[in-house]
Structures are given as structure tokens and as C-alpha cells.
Length: 394
View 1: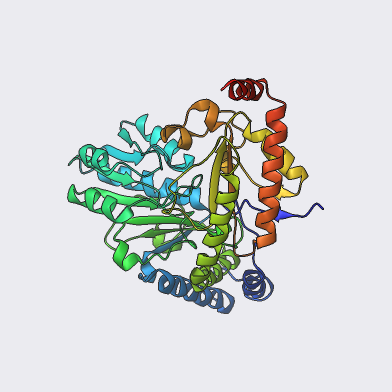
View 2: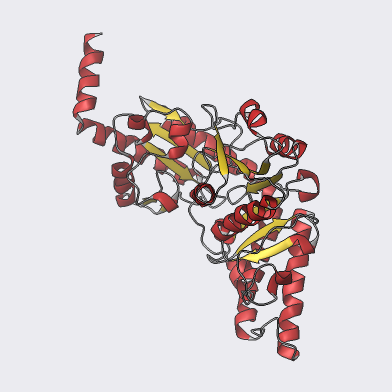
């Protein structure tokens, strides 16, 4: 019987009931502008300050290091462009990033190349781990910024951020990490991590779309991205989206409280991976253990990932082939290509990202349907027909 299974949490998550309840009073009664000097404005300002303080406790940092934005993409753009332009004044015009970054990072770096910056794209191994020796050789005294994501959005691989920070700082470069996928899945203590900047997005952790955050370590100065009023300590202009900021605050608190439950999510993920990789000519993409608890990315030879998605959708299963921001592209995943996956195999990738809400029955249903659909699609493929004939003659 058809059921509904949402397995695309890396793309977005539903807003939780607790977050909605936290936001509702702001819409209904505390709707003032935090910049206004009257009673309604002061009420809103107090709520804004409280949310900032509570988020600082989640990350063990100072509230003055937290800046609210509209999304992860804005945070990425601000961190990279802001740092690059500030460091340019010091004669540093070199940026190092990885070949598997989100397009919000890659496209910003490409834009800066047109503005006179040089950018090196460090490679990764077959599991998606950044090559630290190559990174070490690329970072020089001219490097303004090293930007490497905390965890990959497609294959779920978690990067060695602590070592990357050390490499960047040894040459006087700033270190920024896109932690959009990591936040809520990894316990992040910013007093220990030592990154200079970190971005996140609310809609990945059951807050609404349209709210993000950029952490900027105290003492680090970057150029503004948006000019205007004096909001966010004159660094990011625009009236603060107070209901969504409160929603983000509550979502972050809940995510931290629920971190111990990720062990159970990882067990379901492992059972999902085990079931899917039993399918002939299948392969797990990404590191086997150094990966996000809910991420299972598996490649299937001799099929097209888009066809697989459509058939799974008919069965009530929501999944993806990679980043939701790239679904309109016919090109294979740049992440898989960087990991050495051939083009024809990269086209057959399936990303399933589960959550605490995913049940054992959901896992069984996914495995059953993916197995069935892969078989169906292969039986329609002349390439698969050749494989079957070849195996029969062996």
C-alpha cells in the first residue's frame, strides 16, 4: 500500500510545532520594530536581544558574534565577499576553497575571480574528504580566506575542520565554514572550533525558510554586504525578521537538546545503506562513518537518477539526486565528479536524508521501492541488457 515518506531533509524540513508556537506571539502581539524607541519597539528589541543570547548559549560563543541574515546563501556570500574585500586592503588576494562546496560558495568565488582574486580549488579523496596535504601546499602568506564546508550537503561527508583551521591560521588567512548541513547534526562549540566565520540556515533544522545566521568571531572585521540602517550593529542593514529569528532560536535549542537521538537516526541510516547496497551494481557515495547521521547517498549503475526520483515520487517517497539548488541542471553532480565518480555513474545517484521522524517501517518501504524501481528501470535499458548477456556468458 502506498504511504508517504519524506526523505529529503537535506533540502528542507517542515517547521516544527514548537517553533510555530514560539513564533506566534511575535506575529500577534510583539510585532514592533526593534529599532523604534517607543514601548512596542523596546519590547521587540528585548525579544531580539534575548534570542541572540540564547543562540549564543547553544554555540558557546558571545552574543555579539551572532548576525542574523535571510538564509545560508546570503551568509556565505557575506562571509566570503566581506572577508575577501577586507583582506585585499592588506595585499591578500588569494582564496582557497574545496571542489565540493555548495554553489553559494563556488559561484561567489568565481565572481571574485572576475574581480582580480585568484582562487584555488582543493581536491578531495574518493570519500569526499578534503586533501589536507594539497590544502597545506596551496595556502600561502597571500591567502586571504580558506572556505571549506563543515559537512557536504550531497554525500554527507564531515570534513576535518579543526585541521583546516590550523592550516589557514598558520599563514594568517581567515577560515570560514558553511555549516548549513552540519548544524543540528553535529555538536558545534565555537569556543573550541576556532573558525573565524560560520553560516547556517533555519529551514534545515525545522525553522522557516527565510532566516539564516552568520557567526563572526570577535576581532574579525569584514566588509558589509547590505548597506542601509544600523541593524545588526551596522553590519547587515534591514529590519530584523523578529518572528523568524525567534523561530530559529527555538529550532537551534531543540536541535541541541535532540543531539543524543542522532544515534538512533544513524542506525536507521546504516540499515538503509545496507539494504540499498545489496542491489547489484550499487555503491555508497561519501565516507562510511564520517558522515551526517541522516544522509544515505547511493549510486546505481545503468539508470538515470531523475527517472528513479519520479518513480519513487509515485510511490510517495520524497528524495533527491543531490542539492535542491541544482535540480534544474542536467549536469552530473560536481561533488561526485570531484570524488572521481565517472559521469555515467554520477547520473545514477540517489540522496536520501532521513530524520528523527523516520520510522523503521519507512526504511523498509524505501528499500523495497528503490529495489523494485531500479530493477524496472534497468529492464528498460539496452545497457543493462548488455550486462545481463555478458554475465550469462561468463
